[in-house]
Image (cartoon, rainbow, N blue to C red):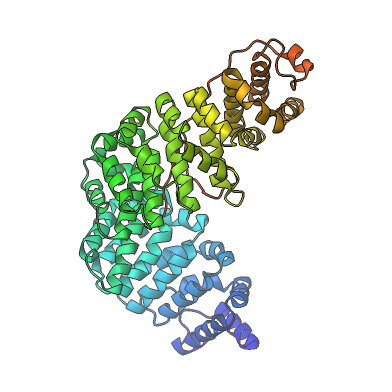
Length: 525
């Protein structure tokens, strides 16, 4: 096969489009056979031979060989290392033009080729943004009746829709209306094909909402028909639609104005009703999505008190027993957002022994760094926002002090600062209760390291000094375990109350090692 492949590649390099169809097809068949036997090795040889540029010239609507050429490109582009060479060889424009072809086999392989080239490839998606592929694909999609053909187009649309420019182009081309129509037609069906189409369409809908411009265009101030249709998915009996609806709300909630509008118009109760349906042996992905939505809705200051009075904290606490890290992670983030600058709520939750004990347990979950980090942050937040002796005592009795001390050594400055501020409040408000735990956790040694380390950020050194001042100021000479050199070095500073980090938009990851999550998350399935 090796010799035959080499010969075929040589012939293709010198072959012209006027050559006999038989000789051309013979070469193409040889390439397809070699790709079937060893795709990666054959793809490398095709790239080195320079044949990709020749293939671009062979992609003509009227040629009998076009389907095979498109099939070869689709097979080659299955390899990640071949995607950029396909773009550089100029394959995208002729492939896009073939989307107008009437031949179903050509369409099938063209769709596969485009989908494979743009899969996980930022270079190729940028190229697609400058073509009319969005409009052509939506036109093509509207004409399709057969399930297989729709699935083929979906396979091209999904990776393309990861590009924000193309997201907006797809929305403007009318894709959303097509997706909503599919959902309406398939929601009550139990046919396998219909169930698959429902999932694909609703997933793609959520993907379109990940773009800021496309999301705002579809929200239309909360009065748009698309937003209203998505709202109707939440109380659906379909888990897939419940999931997609909750994820859509989480994405609409990446904007303050949207959040305020949705909370004022009753979305919180819909999400709590959805969570209620999944408390006992519920669908974990739905739980995760609904908690994501509530977390983002709780970010604007004006929403916090409204959501607390609506009972969101109590609804979230029902999932405290969950053993699923993604649910634990979102639960923690939602509670942390809710209590931000809400002293009464922070005190109420901080005195909840079951909650605090669970937080301490999760602080030790080393195999789920995201959960561990968020547990630490919530422990700190309960103290910082309540400034309550009762909360401090609950955390001390539950064994949480050592975790706050460890948190002060985190590689993330945000977490270090939050821990140091919470520890300074403990020292100022009720050092007697926490003194033994602080000493056992070697707090002073840690502070000494932070102050002497040239890599420590200025705010870390400042807050370390503030904590030392708080320790010393707790008695005439301070605790006996605080060295006298700290007493001499301590300026008289006011203890800061701390607070959450500035608002920022990003995609979060439940598995990022101890990574502090900023305030807004993009929700993805």
